Image (cartoon, rainbow, N blue to C red):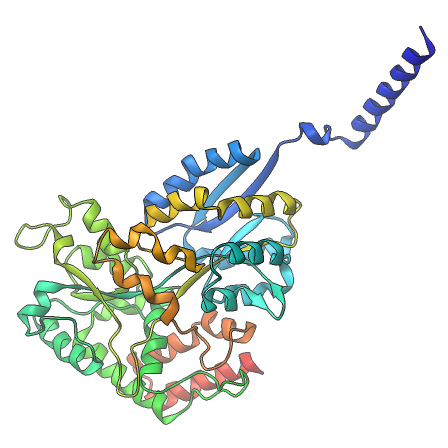
Length: 433
């Protein structure tokens, strides 16, 4: 054996020994993987796409084995908490609304990816950026913005004298009384559910001039005359116009109630209409015509002080600090937001979601169906929970504990409005202390 051959043999056996000692294969031989935990989408076709062609394209483009796991959105926060406490779990986890503020110290800085995407796509909506940042740190990458409007039955409102949806709470209360008398109440949740409950009760509070905290983000002002008046109105309106079983509803109950023709209107995303249009032979009016033809969307009615308001449903992907796959996770997020990757998913949403960046404002999806066009402007017109203060961990704690929602629910169940406001103020003050 020549000296050169002997040297090569020693090098190769030494290299093999080193590989065996580590218990890992050569870096080039390793496959990368990313675990992405998300909510179960209210547009099922979008989840099917993510778990199918999207995952396959990710493998082709990046060599990454993408695991898309979906769970009920009301279970996401417990999964996030468990993952952080154990130091293991999904590499990327979706968060809703201002939830990322709760986990700012447990996530990796995603600023390089987020800034790159925003610069390339016309910038982010303010609401998307605000919930995804703390100071100069990006605590997540904005994925999309949703939001709720009033889905309503056109013909039913016409039957009680309204050719268009009521634009004030007083008018909605009048219409609601008449419709409930016909067995067609308003459907609204006052339960512990992530989207529809805050999405209705925060705008309700604001429409009377009430607010959680002053602009300083410190001074709690829930126990105000405006808040008490809003509670009194809510109790009367609930009894006169609403399906009183809504105290126990989650974000799916109102969808089912609307599609089964037991409620006349509800604050919701576009999913009710999309489902009805997808299955015209399943969802029909009492006259036998396709229900989707009798559905329209409108703003939440304004109140005596202000409005209309909406709470935009911001979705943010958090790169978890414990992840051992952060490089692959960032590569995935960068690819997922490219036009080629994101466009098919965005199209599948059919208007249920707006982009987090402004580039998607001009997408052809917004011209496909005028019934869905009203959702186009929600991110630009949205107001975040915790108003009048900025997004913060404290505001996120208040909404996560359903303090504002419970303020109304307690009064609906019999607590005096004044006492309900005092209770909510006290609980919020603990969060802001």
